[in-house]
Length: 303
Image (tube, rainbow, N blue to C red; front, side):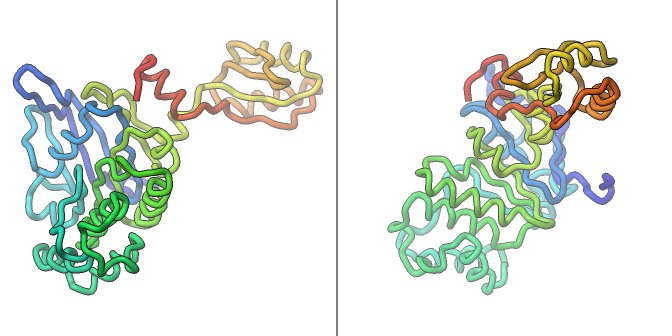
């Protein structure tokens, strides 16, 4: 897909925010493309919420630039296509979930029929008549997502939507995010949970201490730059592989051959082994968990 077919809905360049002597965000450059679920991953206090607040025009950056849907953050034209849940959702406690959404729909000039649509999207139709104060934390978070969806936004920004939820609530929220992130809608999701990002997101930007560590697809982050091979006889395969162009090393682990080589050379490695008379039954990139990738990228930093 070309860039013109998949434009960037969010772009930042050298974005920064300082509070006196404290730097919350520093020289941040990220891009969020149309139709993807982008995971903004980092530990608590890394600068995620500060960044999202800048993108929504809630606070002004100290340096750098940003555009959201091609507009300056916070501009009325840009905000028309954005729905957001930043930090904890706030609603009228004595109104029902449905009535809260009806009030919000009037404020944002969304059609009233959208209320029932978004209640169904977040699986709250059966509890829509209950007062907000009676909702569990998970239900409150889902109602916050429903409110963010009222305008049928092109871009949905969610700040730690599973924060504080129990395992079932987290699983329910992940399923909802996967559903609403399909098609043309774009989701920018901040999280400190590696497993959540790994299960839901297409691309990831890792932030630590206000700075971007790396940006790429989940697969790119998990790739360790190695090739895993199952071939027989194994000892002979190691000898042959070690002599192939582009292979820096070859070791045997758990009955498999682990090559220190660019996964992009997998076809050449396979051809070299087969031409030497070896039987190759499996050949694939070495993968690591997102947690392992994060620890390596941040040199052991916690999340």
